Length: 448
Image 1: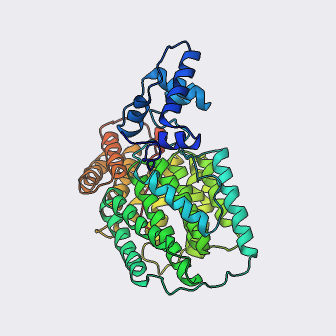
Image 2: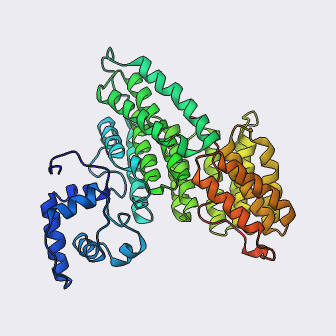
Image 3: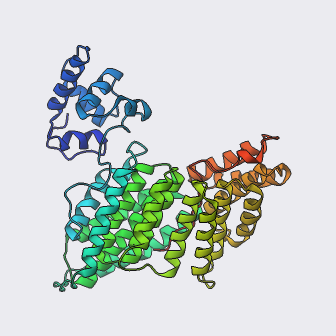
């Protein structure tokens, strides 16, 4: 049996225990004492706690109630989130870390020891907690905007070749993500982040070299977050994005930070947290360093999706018009991105016929190699046709989406295809019942 000083595993219980300074025996005693307070006799067995943390054993109901009582977690949360999802483990960024190089390093260390390997259990930060994360970043961004450039440090030990390899690999991983989905890249992203972490630990280097390495790590966390969303690990995805914000800030990369806010906002839309999505977009748009037009266009699309989710059609259409005015016509995937988000917004607003026409225009603009993205977009187009009453047009699209999804490692695409197939087998369903489930969305393989 491992001792209490061994490195913490990735289980959320490890972080709860260590954050309270509890050994395995301490935690066993806390559970037993609270169980007795609830009228349940229980022995304080250290090995039982160890099995929960290391073997994946699920505690019995009375033990979970006792632990929830000790941690101040309402029983409704225990009922709503299966173990270990209700544990208050690293709900957001680690506390006590500064918004500097050291803080970014600490956040990345915690991410790789926890959220990167968690399947589904970590809770998503929302509401007031999400606003706290926004406030921290806004204050840090304001301070950095007023600060003088940091002096360069000696950079003889900077590993140029490995950093270049990580940058080159990132481009390939982005293409692979679009082709096969998040399940194909998630473990490679984590492995590359571990290499980046080791390089960062060897610094600091000259200011430009340090920024280059931190920027690469931030881009990797962005891709890792997208892969986590695609595989249904939303708590882990949020950790990737929030850690990436800290890395981007330490690198002085305001554009990468804005892209990460767009990812956080879109993830909030996919989870039905529309107010959080709008708050995240506002944080990026109001930053001291304005994002470039292409990123502002993406933020406007996220804003449109959030407004559509809230049922505010005028605001959603204004945001889509704003995005159209910001996009670069020379950018090949710009029109596809705008049409896709427009179609999804129209679905949420209850206009499946208009959504179907819009999504039909987007489909031929996606390259055939982007199979995951094609599967998602085709599924949404099929759903829009089905909800508008065009079942004959929906069925071949749904069948194609399912065929594409089978060639990918994307639970997101598979679920979208299944919803489309189900809709085509439900004749007579009124279009007014349309709109998207909170898990719907579309990805395009992020640019580094």
